[in-house]
Length: 199
Length: 122
Image (cartoon, rainbow over all chains, first blue to last red; front, side, top):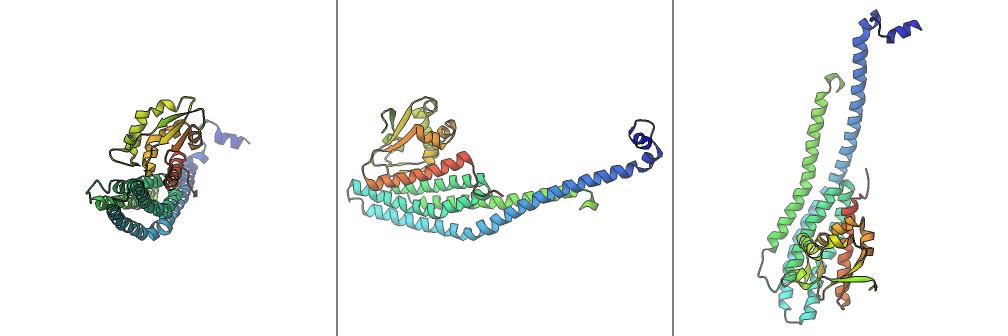
């Protein structure tokens, strides 16, 4: 009992402490580093799994579909503008309905494909899906305004606007990959910080 | 329309020059300032927003610019819907159905942006 008390009292150190303090402190630090590294590894594995799932299951299979969507939307818009111009004399009310029908064609495709894709993105990263929706809203506006002013504007720059919008989407999605590579670099730096015998 | 509601008309000029559509978030925010919605949000009254005749599209971008701050001030879309009704003045069923579909999309985006909920959580 006195020996145990002696270990913890503030009296001059015994031989036991003099001989073993370095070992005890070293072992404690080692245990602490081990626990921290395990936790960091676990979190990193979860994040990587989530990221790989997003890349392989959601993003990669849909890149070609995004390309096709923009290509088809542009072609459809060119046809629709021409149809409105050809029907400019059908009467005001009928013309309004025809405009709405053409606008609808884009909106229906948007709901079918892009909204579905957006909800998959949301399962990975909410703010990414909101940014995605904002860019698609710009595309929606381009389509709507082009048809709205089909008879007034001789503006044929809408194709440029559509493909600029596409590159915004690709940049947004590409930044996800860049972000993951940056995170991996930071994690590597963290692991370098740990003593080598714990790596 | 409920008798106790005050009517506010969205005008043709709110759509932009020679336009039949409501588009653009900055445009929505501009109309919000003109209609002083920041003040209306905190009044007790309920309102009908009248969408003008011959409107062919009510895009989510404009809706969010006009109403998203109201949704935040009123703490959610349900409270917003109770206070503000959007009313279509057109008589054509096809046009009205199209605008109702637009509002469904507006609601989806407004809820997502307000709630920032995920579908799955990993």
